[in-house]
Length: 182
Image (cartoon, rainbow, N blue to C red; front, side, top):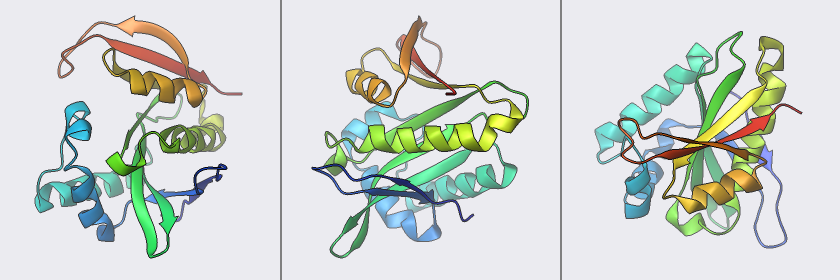
């Protein structure tokens, strides 16, 4: 998997590198999931080394199937790169006009514009990569009690569409935000 995306730097934040997850990301993945805020919003927490390996295996399988594209989002540091987020494009299928984008942001990166830039980069890539297969719409879903995700959606060009009723495993109603192909 040689897909590498970039999100431009801002006056207050460095550029971002988005790439498929690698086996060497296990420790950074485990560290990110120690955050109670991230754990609150995720359906499949990464608690153990086995969980992290399963996450990475599912990521590789999704790429191989050409249906689920999971990106590690990294920012440069003096010592190399640091994991700051994850963006996922899922439910991609030929002839299907929509797919879903999901994401999380590591605790040290929150509030710095990482998520909107990373979600925007994956969204732009998705429309370019899958336009010929009929992709015309991306959806970003989140629970109503997660206002930070509303802000990320808006900053990423996703327009609020509707309130969705709660459905397992989500205990609360949700918001659907939509971004259409330009």
